[in-house]
Image (tube, rainbow, N blue to C red; front, side):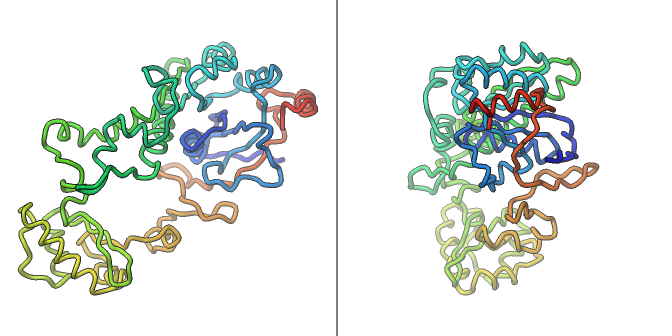
Length: 375
């Protein structure tokens, strides 16, 4: 199979991604989107050549199956690691070391290797060896306690905050930091990306207020649906609009376009329930798309709440190519944009046939396939 020519700021960077759940593949996708050559290593049994992955997080990557628990598979991984810049490892602490593919093992054959470790709890601490999920990590970070409406139980925002923002994105950021450092020193290092750490740092803006009294209980503040000027409202057709008219001038624009007068004072918290009721009643008089037309091009900070299937066709998203078609599937496009780099054009995930660029000869690869170690 013809090699894909990579372009972008990470072109020339070679990444081995040990297959895992969401945050590891997301970090690999972020690197691949911007030019890195990412080889995804899955379990042999998981490889189905008749069904190439259509998962957006696998785009731009090549995939092989390798039994890293076997001596031959471990040796093959060490050989490939000697040619790599980065390895992404998603296991619980200690698992990679028991398999003989931990940081010390791989960096012994490649001192410049950046070893990215993706876990929920981190590599140390009392909870490090235990199981967990996104909801657990954001729970002990304190962040989950702040999410939800007033008087209701904490509500997790699916698994975006821990797995993806606090986990995969932080891992990709850590790998990039380590690449910059290696350019100065020539040495690789271990990146310890923990979702609990990532979730906590994402809450930096609010933390001091939350523990010092400047930020109230969940659902009672300006930005967490406590205030009627920052919330969603149902429309006549059962859909919703999002309102974020925080600043006085934006609020004035909103009120003018709603045609409202004699509203309760938005700066008086005691008046918030009455103000919310007026807004609810008003937004229910028209459909979502009618309101979108009324507020189109204004500074009122009112937007239609689009379903996922609607988002790619929105004129702004279409103009910016926020969504792309990759292998026939519509997916969110790469972000962020760089002024002097070519626009990323992700390719569908493919299988890798020739492992010789990764240090494994055709003869050795054939032997490993025959033995069931490589797929």
